Amino acid sequence: MGFHYKSGPITYFEAFAASSKELCKALRDYPLILAFGWLDIKKKYNRSVLGPFWITLYMGIVIATLGVIFGQVLHLPLREYLPFLTLGYIIWGFIASVLKESCSVFAASEGIIKQLSLSPFFYLLRLFWRNFVIFFHNLLIFPLVCAVVSCPIEISSLLVIPGFIILCVNLFWLSIVISFLCARYRDCKQIVDAFVLILFYVSPVIWMPTALSPKSSVFILAPNPAYHLISIVRSPLLGMYPSLASWLISLVMGCLGMVLALCVFGKYRRSLSYWL
Image 1 (cartoon, rainbow, N blue to C red):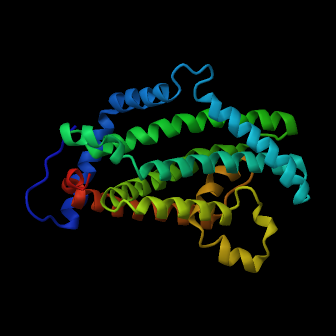
Image 2: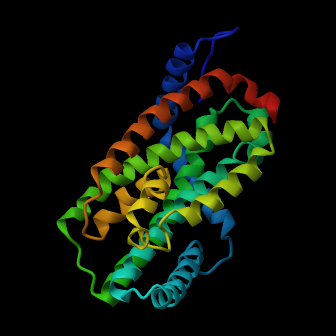
């Protein structure tokens, strides 16, 4: 899965073109990525009865507890709040896991990177796949919640497909940038962890956007990328249509971010083994 880069300095256009070709080649080797991703999950839950469903069970307990407590504190009907909280917490778990694991994805495979000519995209796609699998395990909680609170599934739920694709594109380019930054500057891991924690509290994961005044929403929600990314996935499943602003911001952020990430990848790919 190796790819040849010319010797000497390269322009950002050359870096973008070369890394785009390498990404396409890495995606064609998806059977290897899927196999190693499954292996990671099996290894982590070796000799476990429930396997990755332990995470699902834990998340279900947390969601039920938070739903009952915060529903009472915020004076929200459980039929409205519990599905909102369930989807928000599951989607956020996916986002946070990808971002945090991106910090150590190359350091964890240092020995392999220095010995084999596998593309760095292999390790990033492997990370993405295993979190993708765990995300869909956790998503099984939502139909159960809908059954309990009698939450109907609307036709707008089909919009979750493009919304989730846009979310994945944004997470992928972020994982590229974060992984290279953390490989070069190890202190960036602490910065990412702190940023993810702050982003959790300022994003409507366990609190609803309606809790904010219109003036506060302009300063807290409008510039918050996590809010828009969560909204384009969560709103359709709740029978609502995400705002046009959320769609546009998420889409533009994904396109521009991928261009930036591929330029970074192409420029610094050859330096990766020296940073580890």
